[in-house]
Length: 342
Image (cartoon, rainbow, N blue to C red; front, side):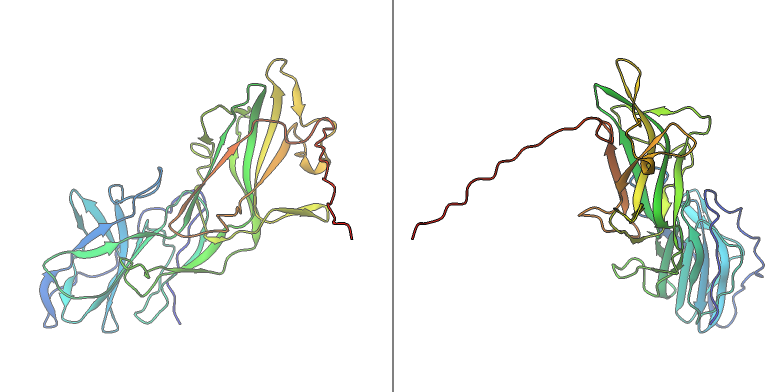
């Protein structure tokens, strides 16, 4: 079975769409003579740079009818208040199935009407991948409606500190033990329907990826205002949807899915580093740096997976040192057990 092959390059979009090899589709005895036109809608974005209907600029379309290809990766572009493409294609007399993807991330394609429409090796990064399917469309006075859905999960880690005593200097932020790539199959149901969801498969092995890296070697000081440090830095916001495993420590290593904050905590009044210190265990130290690493789970009681089309915002407030500097006590005295005499 043939498949449609695409690839997303991490942290950057692919180049412009391949030039069209299709000859102009002229009306014949099997067409109505009316041009096919489009109307595109995208979900509302929670925060930039998510793509919305207003910011969607172009998409590519594949269209099939009666086991024939009538649009083979045609680029459709916004032109003021309408959508245009070239060469124009005319409505056939039989129903048409439309598949659309934005942005154009092709490295090659081979699609037939009977194939599985698969986008291969999608990677986490800055690309907000959209898809739309409109099945069994017939000639109409109105443009073909394309309702785009977000294929990926959007993840933001917001960092802040409201401590009057400590200052927190952040050097790196990463997510650990997650799948970074996967294959996405477009549905054969209209994406305007609730059931019109694509499916993910072939997820890569668990790995680590940096979300923020202090490129000039200087730290970023947290403030009372929550901030997503990846913006304007590595710009990694979109991830492959996946199940999240709880954070655990056993056998000398951490398991599960977690975020890691490499930082230094200082006393505001003296400027002295209070964490990490000589009592910080080695597994919480960042090799060849002065940083310690703070770990926080990605799985929570309410979030056990990242799902496509959802935005997840983790608010991490660091107001004290991660490890205990001194021995503290929390005494509890149990009551006597009351028994009845014989």
